[in-house]
Length: 169
Length: 140
Image 1 (cartoon, rainbow over the protein chains, first blue to last red):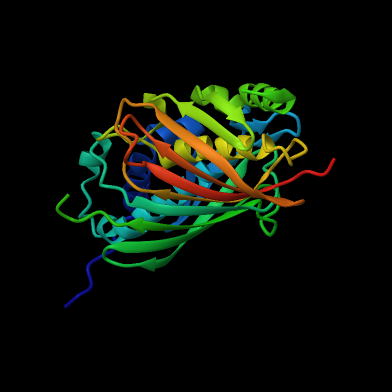
Image 2 (cartoon, rainbow over the protein chains, first blue to last red):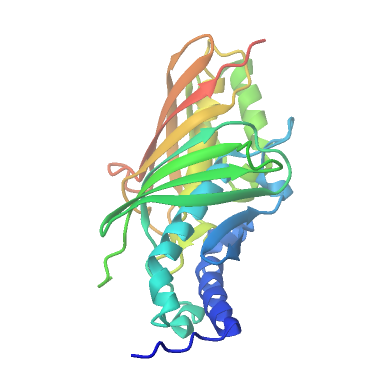
């Protein structure tokens, strides 16, 4: 059987970016913190642009531990949802129209989330990447790392467990 | 509320920009125990279809409340920073209801304060989330 011609690069990119954007921009809390996602192929980097309202200790000053936790949890949940939707997005089975109309796919639910605060978060942009270490039908484990100026000096790392949405939900 | 330390902790918490942005309020503090409240707001919703608040907002509440409890402990000199914090999510908070949390610093050494907290909504018998964490004890 002859291999079908791959879709043009613009079509592929637009399909991926529309899906990612709908996923990220549909959640009010992600907008409240101002988190955006950079995409290179299937690899996502979460970006948290600095804002004064993110400060937790005005004397240092340092980013609030709750902001760091929320940023890491968002990176984990979006990373997990993205990984589990990837095959459908690539195959064009994913209904992007539904998504842009505000019908988000059910997101994974956090069971628990543990954050290690390695250094204080400085008043500047922060970045984070998630790694899905186990992805089962019902449960998943995700590790996340966040850094600011230097990639090899993370200011926080986290580990979380999630319940995957059931297909009929 | 009692003592200078509690007053200092209260003033400090009310000045935190992120807590102001979330409308968080300290409702009680003293002797290693703190209570705080997070009002419901649509801007911090995590699931737009159900209106349930995002875990990140609950984290901010838990982290602040645990830090306040550590700061208000009689053996703590003043400032503190989070070493680690684990949050367990028992159930979704009911949309429209405020989340209240109570944190207790149940053990403190010269360098570490051990804190645990529980968060509830209007149904106070069914916790929304619990947290356990370790906080630094700043040397004077």
